[in-house]
Structure formats: C-alpha cells, structure tokens
Image (cartoon, rainbow over all chains, first blue to last red; front, top):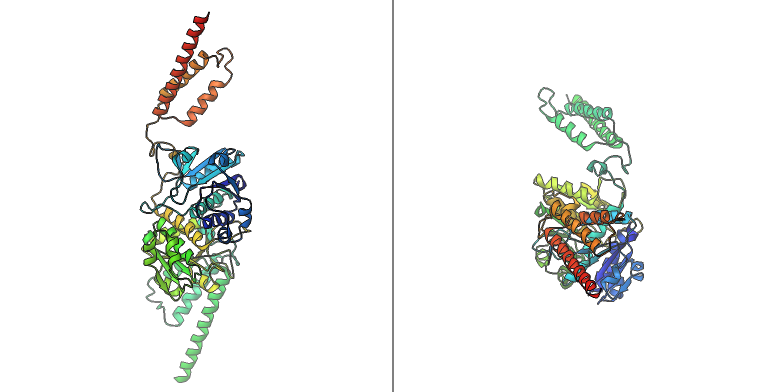
Amino acid sequence: MLNQIRIVMVNTTHSGNIGAAARAMKNMGLSRLYLVDPIAAVDEEAIQRSSRAEDILDNVVITATLEEAIADCGLVVGTSARSRSIPWPLMSPRQCADRAAQAAAADNEIAVVFGRESRGLTNEELHLCHAHVHIPTDEAFSSLNVAQAIQVLCYELRLASLPAENDSADEARWGVDWDYPMATHEQLNGMLQHMEKTLVEIGFLDPNTPKQLMSRMRRLFQRAAPDRMEINILRGMLVAVERTAERAHQKKGEED
Amino acid sequence: MLNQIRIVMVNTTHSGNIGAAARAMKNMGLSRLYLVDPIAAVDEEAIQRSSRAEDILDNVVITATLEEAIADCGLVVGTSARSRSIPWPLMSPRQCADRAAQAAAADNEIAVVFGRESRGLTNEELHLCHAHVHIPTDEAFSSLNVAQAIQVLCYELRLASLPAENDSADEARWGVDWDYPMATHEQLNGMLQHMEKTLVEIGFLDPNTPKQLMSRMRRLFQRAAPDRMEINILRGMLVAVERTAERAHQKKGEED
C-alpha cells in the first residue's frame, strides 16, 4: 500500500522542512516525495535534516504544477483547515488513511497534498482534490509545521497499512515479547499464602484482626499478573524474611 | 486531560528540536514542557522553530534529573524501541493515549518521556517508567526525530481527550458543515429521468438499446449523493442542453 502513496509538497520555502519530511516518510515506510514548484532547494540543509533519508531526497519528483504531480492518481487528498469557500468532503487523518487503504487495494495511485508554510493550499489547489483531510488541533493554534503534518499523516497511513492487531491494552503486558510465562493461579496463590504466613511471623499482620490487608495485597499482585520469575523472586524474599525472623527468635531465646 | 500531561525531554542537544516540540505540543493543546539536564539552550533557534509557541518555552521547567521531573506523576510512560534488557510493558501510541486518559480521569499527573537525539533513553531511565510506548515504524529506519515523535504522541493524546465521535467516513460528506441539504430521492430520481430524456433527445442514448448506461449514471449520482443545489445545477444543465437541441431541430427544420 505505502508504495502507492506519494506525498506532495507545494511551493515549499524552507529546505529544512523538505529534509524533515523525507525523514518522517522513511520512518513510516513511505518513499515517494513530490515537490510542486518548490521555492526551497534540496540543499545541504535538507540533507542534514533528512538524517539518512537521503535516498528519499535523491528520488524526489519535481513538477511545475500540482496537476502534473497528481495526474495519474485515483485518489487525491489535500490538507486543509475547515471549509474555505464551499464545503468539501472532509476527513480526519484516520479516515483518510482508511480511504487510502481502500484506494490502494483497488490498485490506485494516491496523493496526499500539503501546502505552503505560510498559507497552506490555495482554493484552486484544494478544488483539485477528491477530498480534504484536517488534522485535529487546538482551535487557538491550528497551524502545524508542514513536516509535522506530514509526520502525522504518514503515521496514520502506516497504521492503516499494517495487519489489524488486537488493540487490547493487555496485549502490551501479556505474553507478547515477554521473557517468562505468567505464573499460574496456584503459584500466585501459593506466594500470597506464604506472604500472609510471613507477615504474621514478623508481627506485622495480626491474625486476629487482619482487616483487609491481605485482600489488598492479593488485589495488587493479581493486578500485576506476575510471571514465574517474579513469583520466584517474591518467594525468595519471603524465605529470607522468615530466616531473619528465625534468627531474631533465636537471638531472643539466647537473651532470655 | 491535556493540562495534566507533561512532555519530558531528556538531555536534548538541538535547540531547534525544543522549539519544534513546543509548537507540536501547542498545536495539540498541550502546554507543559520539562527539560531534564538539557544540553541545548532555549535560544533564538528554539524560539524561531517554535513559531509563536513561545509561551510554552517561557514556561519550560528545567530539572537536573529525570526523577525530579516525574516525582509527582501517577503515570510515567517512556518512549522506547523494542525491548532492551528485560521486557517492559509496551504500548502503542493509541494505547498510551487511552491509558493517559484513564489516569487523567483519576486526577493523576502524567509524564511522557523522550530521550536524546542520538540514543534515546538509557536503561536506567526506562526502568523508572511504569510503561513504555513505541511508535510503529519501518524496521529498517526506526529512529524518528524527537520533535516528530512528540508530535505523534501529542496527536494521539489530543484524540483521546476529545469526545468520542462517530468515525464513519460518511460523516465527512453528509450534513456536517455542509451548505445545502441532501436532495431527496424524488429530486435525485427526477434529475436522472430528466437526464435520460435529454440524452435520448440529443441522440446519445438509443431508447431501443440503452444497455447499462443509465444504470451506471444512476449508480454514479447516487454514490455522489448530491445536495439540492447540485441537483438544481444538473437540471439547469439538462434544460440548457434541451434548448440547444430544440434550436438544432428548428435549424434543421429551416434547412429542410
């Protein structure tokens, strides 16, 4: 999908933005940068800001007009603030990425068009687009740096190009790329019982008025979902505490 | 939510990145920037790249250590490439934003921590974090500019702070911020019938062998879902064509 997408920058004035855009694109797996009537050159500043995305800069396509840059595209989306003249189909970056994915699946070339640092795209340029995309911003400060806008769109395009993943926050913790298997409930429970016993031994927990202490500890450890190594470490700690308690008892015995 | 979130940059070397980060934050409605042991100063370059986000720079908090910068935070998320030493809870930017929203709803301060341009965060710094966040990138080119990484996270944080919207792509076209109501089916159908009649009149459509032409036109216009002004324009065009056809007939009549 991503190799069917071209990023089009119109009339860019700062070469640093061209370099930063190339880097942002390459980070997200895009590679095709078009410059329409650029004011800035692909110069040392651009190369320096591209930070080893020079290959993107080497392959830049420069055109005199926007029409040339998008002529063979089945989907052209232009970045825009909210409606200028007549309203135009307007998408969020996520919707834009989904639409791009559909267009790519149907073998289309896709262009996402970004305007001038000073004033974005003109109405005429916007009217060449099938639809517009607006990056949600704070209303009081809505003008993103163009390379930053490209970063956000390329990020969403990349996400749309990846196979759908289970987005559960638990995935971030469980199993995926972890180094030990989760402790079984029996192992976890054994540790908690060991903990309770140890806390009584050291006089911290009064078995007659336990209140909710062990429930809270159970809740904490079950929420943390320890793995087997963590359980082993915790049990080792509890054994060390018990041994210390034994020595204290013996000491006390000696002193009596 | 967003005013409970601080962006923390550790040991930043390029002042331009500080400025660009301030702009990216302000675009997304965040305002609290912390610099831990910065190498770069908040200088002219930073101010220039912040592009009127100077208020963010004016309010920067500078600390000597990361611990100081995050001491009062209930949630600390550090940006990371995939597991370094032992695996750590790892989230995508979207998951991170959802978790931040939950933490904010429970009145916590939240820190999102970004590392050095050259080498990100150290293992020790990463181990101070409750969880890590990884921005999905192309594997072959995974190092984002730090201000770009801040842009992506702030974008996701902003989205998570907004009321849930109907994310249907149709919303982008229907009703919301449009200037005329949609044509009713009767109006649209009337236009298509008018079109068919006109196309026959001008000899384009052969009523005896119509094939699928009008079905395709119907499909196109129904897909475009015209509004009432568009229908009026189309009907006006058809009337003009009909008048032209009449004049052509009269002319022909005169010539016979």
